[in-house]
Structure formats: C-alpha cells, structure tokens
Image: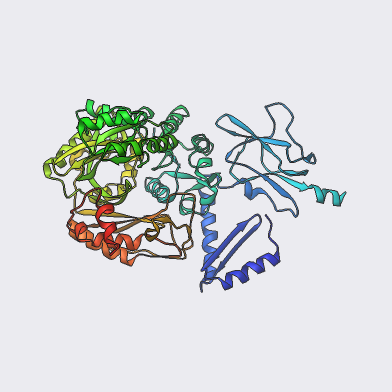
Length: 159
Length: 452
C-alpha cells in the first residue's frame, strides 16, 4: 500500500474533524503520527526512542515488510499465514518464478511451510514479477509481501 | 534447562500478563498475534511480535502447528499457552515435547487424562477424592433416564469431552431429559468432536469452590488456598473471590488436602485448579473437574498470597522447581475479581465490539487491573468480550466488597457497552454483601431483581 500527499492531507482533515486524540499510521516507507496533544513533538521522539530501544534488543525486530521499498503501481503477493518461505518446490531445482516472468492468477509462485506441511501460494493476479522480497528459507509473517507484481494493464502500457 | 525466550501463544490481558512476568524474570518474550491484534498492547510490550495469520482464531490462535512453527522460527525455548485457545490441548503440549520446546503447563499425558471428564472422575476416585454420584458415558436419552431414576431428580447432564457449559443442562423430569438430550449431545459433538454425555446428581444449593495447586512435576505439590466462583451466568464465572468465606474450616482443609492428593497422584507439573461443588445443605465438597492451566481468576489468589503464579509457572518450566514450600504460603485479607466485558447486559449480554474512545481506570490502594485495553483500543468482534479484570484486596470481605463497589463506580469506559453498571449493582445486592448465594443466585435471584 502506498499513500500519496493528497491522501495524507485528507487523513489530516478527517483527524481534525474527529474526536480522536491521536492517530498513528505506519505503512511501507511512511510513518504518520497525528496528535491533538500540546506536546506532540514529544510523541514522535518517544516513538523513535521506543524504536531505537527495540533495535538494541537481542531479538531481530526487522520484518519482511520493512525491507520492501514502495514502488508505484506494483502489487504485492502476500503470505497467507506465518511460515517458512521457499522459492522452489524442493532443494536444487529451479524456483517457481523468476523476476521478469509473466504470471497468471493461478500460477504457483512459492511454498510456505508450517511444521513440514508445504502449501503452494498462487499469484492471484495477472502480471509480471517485478521483485522477490524474501530470501529462500526465511520466516515470513501473515501479510508479508513475498513478491511485487507489475499488473497486466500497466505492463501492457509500458510495452 | 534455564529458559531465555518465551513464546506467548495467546492474546488479550493474559498475553500482557505473561509478557510482564517474563520481563520481571529477565526472560525475553515473543508474542504470536493475529492480524487483528498487531497493534495490541501485548504486541507492543513484548520483545517481539509475529503475525501468525488472519483474525479468525482457527487460522491463528487455534492452529497448533502455526504457533509451534512461530516459536521455533523465533528461537524460543518455551511456550506459554495462557488460558482458553490451545491451553488445554494435549496435541499442542505433545508437539512442544517433540520439538523440544518447554510447554509451560502439565505434561501432555496429564492434559489428556484430565481433559476427559470421565477419566478425570476415575482418577479422582483413585486418589480418594470425593466425587458427585454420577454415571458413565451415555449416548442415549433412555440410559440417562434410568440413571436419573436411581439417584433421583434433579440431575445435571454434561459433555464427557469438555467444559465451558457446552452440552450442559439441568433435568428435573424424564421429559426434560428427552427434550434436552439430542441438542446437548449435538452441541458437545460440535464443540469437542464427541457427543457423549454423562449424568451427575444436581446439587440445588451449591457453591463452586476451587483450589489452586502447583506441582514441580517431580512429586512436590503445594496449594495456594481456594477461591469461590459461585456467581455464574450460564456456567460462566462473573465474580470470583479468595478465600471462600462460606466454607467451614473443616471443609476448607478437606478440599485443600483432596486437591493436593489428586495432584500428587499425577506427579502434577505447573499450575492447576481442582474444582469442587460444595453442597451447602450437606456441608460436603465433591470433585467436579481439574483445569490444567492458569485460570482467568488467578489474580485473587495472587492478591491473598502475595505470590506471582505466572512467574512460578515459568520457574518450574525452567527446571527451577517451586520457589515456596507449603509452610511459606500464608493467606492474608480478602480479594474479589469482577470480569469486565464489552457486552450489553440489558440486551441479553450481546457482545459490544468497537473502538474504546475513553478509558479511565480506578486507582488506589488494593486495586489492580489486568487488561490489554486503553483509550483508542479496538475491541475485536472475533474474540471473547472480556476487556479487563478488576481486582480488589482488603482486610476482610466486607471491606473488599466496599472497595469493589467504589472501584466499579470510578471505572469509565466509553465508546462501547460494558457490564460495569451490572457488576456495580451485583456487588451492592444485600445477598452478595451477606455472602448468601449459590451457583444459581445470579440467574434466579439477582437478574430477576433487576426487572423491578
């Protein structure tokens, strides 16, 4: 999901009219904190401080989602549940899909494994694979983008 | 083995509670959430949150494979199941055992044996724990009628495979059995995958009392006193307290001993609760069932003993054993818990999900709130409607009732319907103040009194 300037302005107007006290929105490449508090500046720094301290924790807090730079017009294929991501049907064989390849809605693009149960993920969209977002064998969470797809219509426009 | 990182396989207030206990023991915590709980307090407080799946519990919190996969992938060495969801699943405990993740709870075998109500009754009998006169497994209404004729009406029909009030009904005549049997059996089949029922003598004037026990899995067992959870609606607890002030000293000592005997008989590991039905007229307590998990109402026990039961569970799971011997456990004062739900009592307790736009919790000495909610939190329609547990402690029961009454008045929750006002009227009812109630009081006496 990408959000443009107009949408941000619309959000701010909505927020002003609402009786909400605070609104936080985080999406790919955007972090928006709106507050009606007098010391709203402190809010941002508090959030950043929290983020900084999370980085110091021994646990890896990065998520697959964070690694994806927003690219206009691309549609993600997302993980249907948490699991381990595999690009190929088994070790040593070619991946289901390569970057640049055309896919249809029913094209299988990868496997998600949960406790040795491997479930294929279908593209669910017609278009061209523009980017693979996850390394083979990595854990992905529900909703994490696995691939970015340039949808059919846009692919056609550019051609 | 000493633990270092714990996976929290639950949501809501108990997930927050477990994360906090981990922190105070210096353990890291990873919480597995559904898509609906990404922004929840547990996800915020844990060292890490991972999104298991979409909002429906079947595709997230109730999927044992998914939960264990997430625990392994995040390098957790233990898993705490909380209550509800998979907490009483021997399959989850077994899966953890196979994957060498410490399950914070009893052994899979214990869960399986106590999970089946009829097996649990047999185990209780073996351990010389008194049980309510009851039947074996019954699959037809005619068998139930035969048994009822032998012990006399009224009788209570229950599902053999599980609890929570499903498949349960009271029969006062043969016709009641004929009317209710098929529906209850179908309900049990749907909920537990097994339509078998059994019959017990129904005690008209009964209190629900239960003993909190804890075992190290190697023979050492202690109890932390008892609770009274007689205020129930449709077999769901509404208010819980510790101690059970209505019990005689003799009856109290008897249930403590019986609960410990049962736990020792099983080499019980971790926290558990042994539930009893106290027959007020006879002055006798009978075993009902054993719950193989930490319970919603555990805070009232913590308040009167000063012991953190979740920390104790984690310590046992890490091989550190019990931190207390029976002689170290002293009970002081009286504690009461009111479950605060997002529901509308005046509309037959219809759930009231939505955005909480105002939240002011009572504060002060002897007041504790276990909750995952706050202003701006969204109460999801996907899960249980409990949004907070309000717990008070005072020197004696009378003072505790007074403190609860004030705390309920001071609690302000806006944006959704809650049962705060209902609970306030309940604790101010003269019967509650006099502790003159039984398991049917709420439905037979209190609720009708609200109509006037």
